[in-house]
Length: 368
Image 1 (spheres, rainbow, N blue to C red):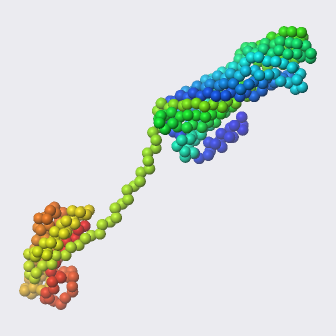
Image 2 (image 1 turned 135 degrees about the horizontal axis):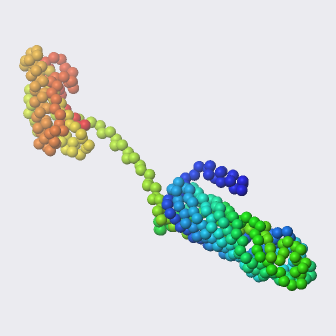
Image 3 (image 1 turned 90 degrees about the horizontal axis):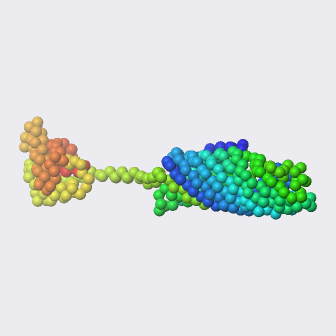
């Protein structure tokens, strides 16, 4: 038992993701029952059984974190194959069967090993089992023939270890195929009623292993290999596909269009209208959030001093308003257009005072 506890502690400590079995489930499985030889108490004899059949039905509950608990009922059947002994002392022939049944409470843990089609699991259980014997043994003991009938049912506490593999069936949600190994044993010695007849009865009565009325075996170790199905009534939904954050759009550079004006004019030439039309079309084909229209003049003026500065300021604003009106005619929403007049500030070409420069008489259309 200490070895089992240590193994369980090691397995639980291994970091693993649990298969999320949730809620109620049922399972059934069947396969081969492979008992070890059972030693007859206080003798050199050993009962040997041929491979038989086992069937197990369970109802359980998954906690959603890998752990689950279940109640199990089982049945095993094996034929008594022979009664062996050291040196062939008993020279016996056998005919009969042994049947075992029981109720077990199991605790299990499912492992996620990164394979969507395979989930190993392990566990252990405790419960109560019954062993039924109905066998006839004939032979001779010390040269005398005898016949012995062994029968009756014995019950005691039992425990088991479990290791299995589950294979989710993709086209049946909640259904999994299982392949499983169980080691099951009952506390002993197992005692059954025995009746011996024949000339050897008197000799056999002195041997506790063949005493009339009581025949005990000291071991009952069973290995079971099975295939089965498990159905979950409330299967966990498959994990959602990983969400990839959309790539942030690359920042769009501001686009600038220049419209030039004649000296002391705020009207548009044909060339100017063509440039405004291109800017209007570009604003609808790109992610434009705002359009800035900035008007400018050169530093020439027919009015010296502050009066000339005010005149250029007003002229630059009229030019910006002209461009806005043309953009609106070309389909651009008016609320998205901001206009500004900067007079002769920020010249494209630096000049001396009171100089006419065509490149400074402009409006800049900036698409943001």
